[in-house]
Image 1 (tube, helix red, strand yellow):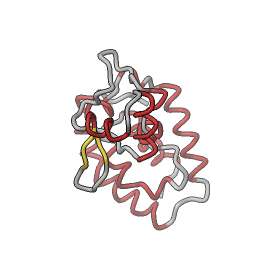
Image 2 (cartoon, one colour; image 1 turned 90 degrees about the horizontal axis):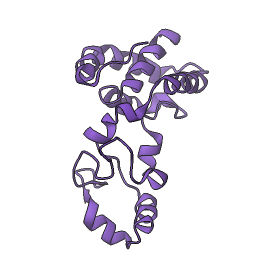
Image 3 (cartoon, helix red, strand yellow; image 1 turned 180 degrees about the vertical axis):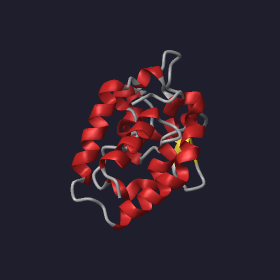
Image 4 (cartoon, helix red, strand yellow; image 1 turned 30 degrees about the vertical axis):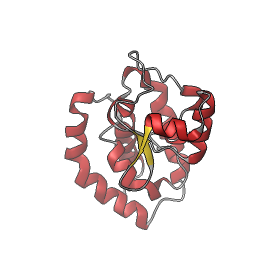
Amino acid sequence: MTNPQINILQKLAKDKHNENKKYFDKLKKKAPKNIDYVMQELHEAEFKRTDCLECANCCKTTGPLFTSVDIERIAKHFRLKPQQFIDQYLKIDEDNDYVLQSVPCTFLDNENYCMIYDVRPKACREFPHTDRKKFQQISNLTLKNVAICPAAYNIVEEMKKKMPL
């Protein structure tokens, strides 16, 4: 598998969008019994080859949702009250979720390291969500993530080969 360059990833994802959408629509209707196992395998294999520190496109182009648990944990890390953390770093988006005030992520340093890695939001810990149980239920999210994350792109391409529908 090749690692798509970030500058062409969006084009590659756009070119594959209709194909991927059809695939995921079929997958939602009748997911293979072993989908969780296969996805775990594909995810682990891809992340043995992928170094997120070389890319960090997720941190540069999108912001995670912050749950109340995330806010409490990160605020405590900074020795702030949760409301102080919210006021300083977050805003409420159109879906009424807490998100970063701006991207790239405030907590990403210039070497692509996360300055709050040990207390990072759940959404960051789980990104790109390709090892999630009942993977077929998050197809809309995955369709977005293949345009952001080269690993997610590769996993979906490999998935279509391993589990043709």
